[in-house]
Amino acid sequence: MRTLSTICLILLALAGLRAGAQQQPALKLAGTMPLEGFSGDLDHFGVDLKGHRLFLAAEEHKTVEVFDLRTGRRIHSITGIDHPLTMVYLPESDQLMVTDGDVGAVRLVDCKNYRIVSTLTLGHAVDHSAFDARSKYYYVETDNADSAKTHVLSIIDTKSFQRVGDIPDLPGNSNEGMIIDRAGNSLYVNLTGTDEVGVVDLKSRRLVMRWPLPDAHMAHAIALDEKSHRLFTATRNPPKFIVFNLDTGKVVATLPCVGVNSDMWFDIARKRIYVTGSETASVFEQHDADHYEHMTEVPTAYRAKSSIFVPELNRLYVADSGKGKPDARLALQIFEIL
Image (tube, rainbow, N blue to C red; front, side, top):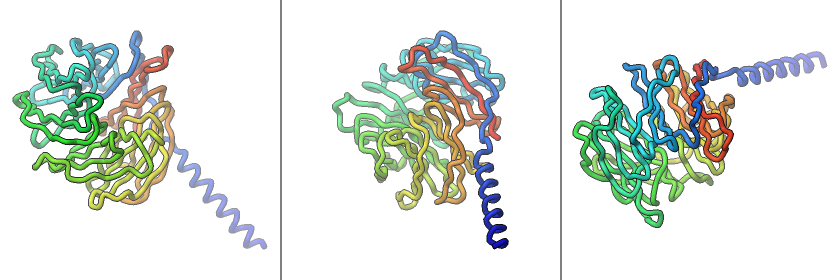
């Protein structure tokens, strides 16, 4: 009997240690920078590491806000953009390319004086984008009318700021998050119109594979673990974290996650995934390519769905939005990675 009691106590102690380990914080709030006078949604980020600048799209304010990457202090507002959404910073030219949503254009901003120097009109509307660091091509979701059955990705050569082609026939009238592998071979895209992840061959500029979501809808956030050949996506209805095998297109893991998510980041050094949504950030630990554990939910704020992970600074920057909540307090939150 004593032996059995001892075993039970040991098991309870081990369970307590495991529970305690799971409750260890993964992120620590280092600072909050209020955005007084702002309302509506804050969308996606861009970063200039060398110049220590962080860029954030403020949709209703019709600006791109510029922050000091180190302190979080707001240093400038870039104006003249009607509906800023996504962006990429080009360090070679010190320029910023911003998708201007309902205008259906991409704006080119000179970051020496923060003025728009050129505009490229693409179509009915634009939104999500992905940058290929090898080819220097910028792929921009170009939407058709709401009733359209397909849409395209416009291809922009960032060196000439010219449209050099399209990827046609993507199902649905729009898509959500996109990401390109480091080799510049494949682009992965959340096809919200058909509840699939699409795989685009960038050489042929064609959609070559479509992977169905497992009983889930509205996939927004997306990330890659190329070493393990895994793709991560997150849906909103219901909120799910989903892992695909890149070689087979099969789902290998699913776990509940935060709702109203928009961004996701894979922390290679710590084998973690951060998913940002409304009120919390979900943190998952990767045990191996097929096994994942929910670590914690880190409190953030209302519609704190947009974020950017800067591993060089060991930080996660989160934008607290206000769409649908008149008394929401918009802000930039800075989290240290623990």
